[in-house]
Length: 229
Image (cartoon, rainbow, N blue to C red; front, side):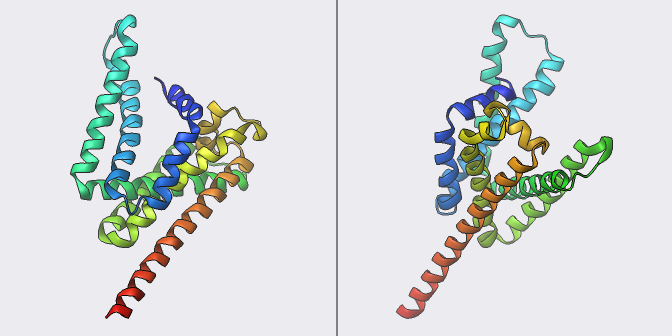
C-alpha cells in the first residue's frame, strides 16, 4: 500500500470520497465528533504510510512474503491510534484541524502563485513548500484553539472543500491530460497551472459557501432567540 496505491484507491472510490467531502464541508461543524473521527482516520492513514516508508522499511528487514500483510496492519494500527487520539483529545483535534486546513490552503495557493507567475524558487523549492505549510498550519491551528466557535466551522469547511474539490476533479482529470492516479502528485507539485486554478477555484467557492451558510444559520438562531425573548 504505497502512496500511489492509496491514490489509486481514492480514484477508484471517488464517489465515496466526494460524499465524505460534502459531509465535512456542509455538515462537519454540526457533526463535530464524527468529523474528527473521519479526519483522524485520513490523517492516520497517511501518517502510517509515511512511517512505513521512511522508518520501518529503512530500519528493519522484512521477509518479502510477509511485507504486504505487515504493511497493511502497521498502517491500520497507526490510523486507528490517530483516530482515537482525535476523538479523545478535543483540543489536540481542534489544533490539528486548523493546522491541516491552514497548511493545505497556504500550500496550494503558494503552488498556484508559483505556477501562474512561472517563478523560479531554486533548488530549495520543496523545503519552501514544507515551510509554508508548517508556518501557516501553526498559525491556523493556534487560531482554531483560541477562537473555537468561528474557527471550527471554517476549518471543517476548508478540509471538506479540499477533499470535495479533489473528488470532483478526478473524473475530469483526463480532460487536463493528467492520469487520475497522477492527479494528487500533479496538484501537490503545482505542475499544471490550469488544473491547479480549477482546483483552487472549486475549493474557494465551496469554502465560502459553507461558511456563509453557517453564518446565516447562526444569525437566524440569534434572531429567533431575540424574537422569543
